[in-house]
Amino acid sequence: YIWEDYGAPQLDTFVTVEYPNLPPGQYSIRVRTHNPTRLQDTAYSNWIEFGEPVPPIPPIDTVIVPNVVTPNGDGVNDGFRIQGAMSYTSGRYLMIMNRFGQVVYENSAYDNANPWKGEDNRGNKLADGVYFYILRLDDNPNSAHLELTGNVTLLSN
Image 1 (cartoon, rainbow, N blue to C red):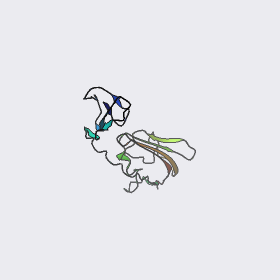
Image 2 (spheres, one colour):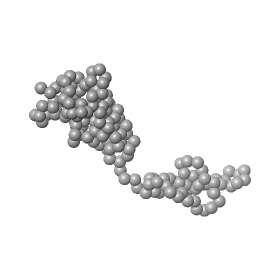
Image 3 (cartoon, helix red, strand yellow):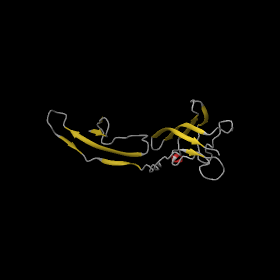
């Protein structure tokens, strides 16, 4: 017998074959019998599907990055809230730089519940102007990686 999965065939003289320690997932297998002589006398079984169901992977939201932050307390655009970022569960990194390329804010665990509000890492208010960002998002279940760059205008008054 030759047991075949979608990888390399496994030669075996036994009627049964074992695949121990398979991770959850769907698998396909079939058996092929052949005559060891030069005669073409080969028969294939149908593919047999088996395995444990894998839970569905949650979808990833579309990411929309704001282009203005106005931290003036009016409740509109007071923070740099990135729509869709929270669906990336493995990593959310945000870096904000000034016009000279100096890093003024960095957060390796970005969360919309505590967005950037126009302050540096020490809590000092930054001057109004255009800042540049690098946003890196990762999600393990989906094997997704997204890196976005752009600019955001800070208007405090």
